[in-house]
Length: 314
Image (cartoon, rainbow, N blue to C red; front, side, top):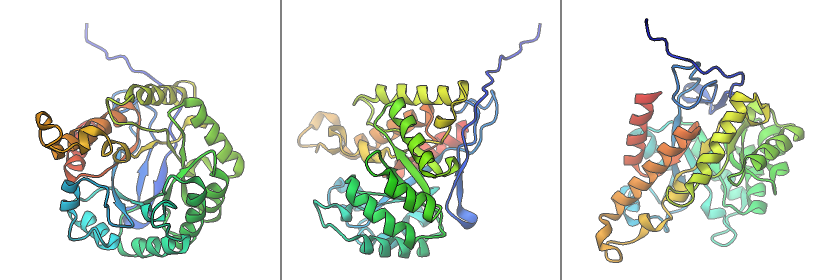
């Protein structure tokens, strides 16, 4: 008797979201299967990989990464061009660290000018990330959304504290994509999606950021949350959770001890750069296997490895 593989069919489907404009625009989502289960149904768009840059020199990054970008890191436009030409990711994530009220406290107008110059000088789709200060991010994103009108950027992220301002400016006034950021909880993720859609942001303009941690630092909570979100979206056809997921892996992995401890402090741990790369790759692979449609990375070797993984499995 011939072997017949059983197929798991789901009634739900992840919405497909387009980021960027022109020939280099990308699509994420669109699948009705669990990650990389191409034998069960429609794969949708392949998982995408982005690289992080800052609007200021990355003083707090590890020395090994600063050395990679030493000739371009003081100018984020040159930095973006270098990444586009040499690392070739699917998109670039511009994080406005310089706007942090506890740092340089750049004005929303300054940030808007940087973003406008960036989108004019790179063909890659742009993801805009804020400072983590809810009030400042809302003011910055309003000006930045206006300055990059027509470039279809993704703004990370709207939270429960500032979703009205970011949703209205980025998602409605200028028709950009809005990242809905929650803290590793399926109910919080669902609630924020509902709030954004009730505000008037279209479902196809929402991308979820459900939270992340580095592997070994409570990542099991991230994994279980992603599992529950994807199973509810696909198996229960829960439309409030049928948005693609983006995971800013590098925001977490390059801040843990394994990545930042010097060889002098931890001589038995081996090369600090290799440790950081291993943490980033392990976390990114876990996120993609759990349901993330896009990850943001920092080290070129991590990008190369995760690209290879996606190409082999997608």
